Structure formats: structure tokens, C-alpha cells
Length: 394
Image 1 (cartoon, one colour):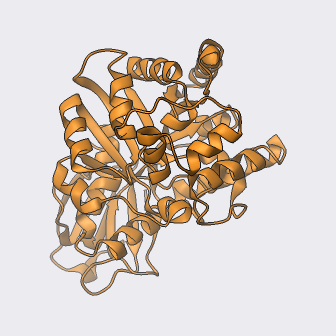
Image 2: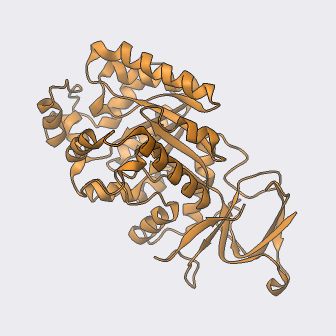
């Protein structure tokens, strides 16, 4: 048995920490009980700062870890697509696998207990199968030409079978409206919904909105120059277009767990439409990636008021300098100073676990095995600072 004490213990039963508190666990990490310390000086295993549950990284592309440092910032989505197309698979599989293994280990050491990960190929499968971290793999598909829908989905199902043979939870998933024909968007949504989980890049950039609503802009021109078919011009937001395509699969409301990633351009109309159509909607905030590509951030204040459940992800090392959940939270705190650490930890731990249906994770309560993480470098009021970092205790 271990007894771990901390200045702040975030059980996440609610947003407030227990101060000068302890958690006792079995040797395997199963939580026995929590409580307040009578005398911290008598605690053998004490951590200044905060002890929190293991993080859930709600959006990552760990297979792109070999791309760290290769991309220019502020390119916009059209420029980012051009870069990723020119830089993808420019190193050997062995180098790609080594980068995945190194970053998966670092994610674990920093306290990530589970991850919703995007894969376009099988590069990460063996590493994820060997990792103590739980991962759900979203097999992202692309294809702008309607006639390619069947072959694209066949390859996705082949990858799904390979992943499942290694014990991984995996299913096909759509990428975004601007890389998919309407037919492929609905077909991949159908496959994801059958698994009970769907992840979708939604309203990441104004270029996406301009493309769908009016058939103009940098992303529209980028697709046309590449000789690709473009999605229909609807006069509505790309989110409403996505909801229309979802309803080609089955009628709303959707009981499945659906993760809308980014939502930089979501407005109140879109938030209300999501609430009406989905019973279990989640939003993945990836603020450092949004700043890297677009110098923009999601409307976090509106999202908080909307009642949608927020989660936190790191995105990939093609659009981020690190895969560090604490740095994502610090970015949110710096740009939205009204946010408390407890609220953000609910997003980064409890809500992510709920999206993935990992009941043993996300909070510190008897019978659970969430992992325990030390977050240090807090200021006198318990807020994150530029020197804050995390490391795994259990």
C-alpha cells in the first residue's frame, strides 16, 4: 500500500481540491481512500503542488512524431496541408517507429493514462499495443472523389482488423469536410458510429468555413489547384454540413460518443445544433496547435456556457512544439484567466475518460485506477506557471 500526500489533491469529484490531503492506494494503483492530513510533516511521501488523476489526451496524431520541428508556423490550413503532403513519410519506417516509441514513453511518464489517437497507417500499432497507456485508435480516412469511397473504406477496414488483432480498440473515422467527398464522409461516419465512437476535425479554421459556406478562400483554391473535387457549397457552416451528413447514416439524436476536434469557429447556433442532435457530444480543445497554424483560439467562454463537455488534446508534432498536457492547460489559463485549474483538470482527465468510456480513469475515488500525477511549479494561489510540469507517480 502507498499513502501519497499533497498540498492540493484533485480528486475531481468536483473542481475544488482537497488541501493538505492524502490518497491511499493498493500496490497496483487501485485507490483505497482519500482524506485530510493531520500533520504533513509526518507524511513519508509528500508532493508540493498538486496530485491529480492521470490525464486523457483527447486528440493526438502520435504517428506524426517524426515531424517535430519541420513545419513553419502561421501557414493557415491551406499552407499546412501543403507542408504535410510534402513532408509525410520522408524518413524510414524505423525512424518513424522510434519517434513514436520515444513520445509514447514521454506521454506516459508525464501522466497520460489514455489517449484518443488518430492513425492514417499502421506505424503506431505495435508501440501502442505494448504501451501501458490505453488508446482508442481512430483510423482517419481521406478521399475527395466519390468513386474512391469503396476502396478507401476497404483499406480502413483492413487497418481496423490489423489493429484489433493486436488488442487495440480501433475503427474508421472521417477527417474533415475539406478532404472528403460527401459519400466518404457519411460512409466513414457510419463505420465510426457502429463502434460507438467518432472523432472529427470540425471548424478548425475560417478557411474551412469560407469553403463550405461560399465556395471561396485559400482552402477552396488549394483543393482546386490540386485537381480535387470540392465539397458542396451550402451557405451554412461546415459543422451544420457535417450534421447533415451524419443524418444520412441514421436519424438524430445520436447516442454515440462524438468528439468534435478544435471548434475554433463554433458559434451559438452550432452549439445549439450539436446539443439537439447529439446525446453525448464532446469538444477537444487543442489550443497550442490552433495558435501554431492559425494564430487563433476556440471561443472557450461560449463553449463553457453551452453545456458541451470539453476535453483537451495536444494534436501532433507537425502542428505543435511538444505533446505536453500541462502546457496546453497553461495556454488556456493564460488566454482565459478566469479558468481555474480544477475546471481544466475536469476537462483534461474526467471528461476525456468519459468520452472513451474508461470508468476506471479520470478521477480519484475508491476502486478506480486512474494513475496519479504530480503537477509542480504552481504559484501561491495554486495556478499553473511557465515552470509547471507533470510527472507520473503511479
